[in-house]
Length: 414
Image (cartoon, rainbow, N blue to C red; front, side, top):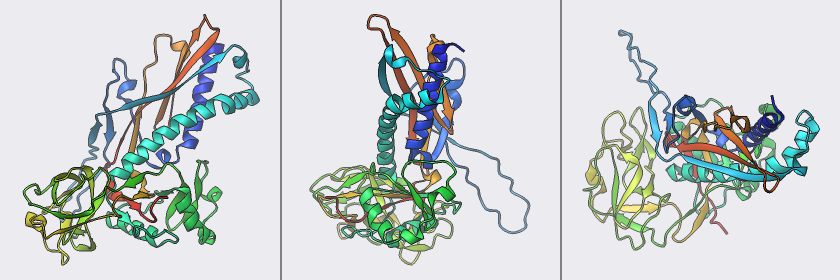
């Protein structure tokens, strides 16, 4: 291996290791790798494929087996993103021995770590924002600080009611202020993170209440508009399986990420269809002053029914009809709330793909580990006696099971 290729491979290896360590949210979600671009002839476009988790139907009784195929459906993320970070080095800065661990460590700490940290931080922030906006469950009381496990316990209950597995893959990501409020009074309940994690990841606090806890100051702040005193209007936009709800008396258009409930519309158990005892939360995906696109879809009947009356009876679209039906938003008007997330690993999906190795392949290297693919590419600038280098990642994100996640809401942001 030439010295140039050894250097590029070393940078790629160090960048991959640092990215893995810094990606506290990305690394606790479902990481997927789209190998379509790794094949000869594939072209990089604006779409990536993400695999949906398998789902099965129950067989009742001792009748003949109803064998089900393993059929992982694939969803296309139509706006894949290519992000990167760029550097330059002069000849003096590149006088290192790639076979010397101490030289590699010093070079990595001085150059690679700060560069990759910025790259990962920006991607994580975007991913957290997208995941939070896709999450419609919320626990806690707006305006009341989260100081114990009450809100967290309610969030875990929402995951349980959404049938999220209790398999050790549940996490909480919270900002420093929220984390300090909770952890201060619960120090004795946290297990030492070194006893439960064989591999270090930044921000790991410990484990308690069935969750791995991470401190992360990239959590999204949800801003409410100036009008949260709203009712529903005509039920014409509400259909079985549809994603629209029409609001009335909205002075200021809603924005994506705002959560509301509709009086009389309760969440139901995914299997038994019994009322869960709380109103079905909706999150605005496309806001407006009248018709709002929301998630989840309103399913009134059938196997995917998700709403019912307080007594568990099926509802008709007329439940959303008329200005007498109150709509209650989460939080106060014109107020901001930082919103931690409680989630199961498979609530959110982060998918990467291999970027192509260019013609000067001896100056281009890829590394893929645990579903995270990075490319390092360099070229020389003979006029200025410099080496130019770029580190790139092609990625996309999805929330295929948002019912396996729940926001927390507490005090308004300062």
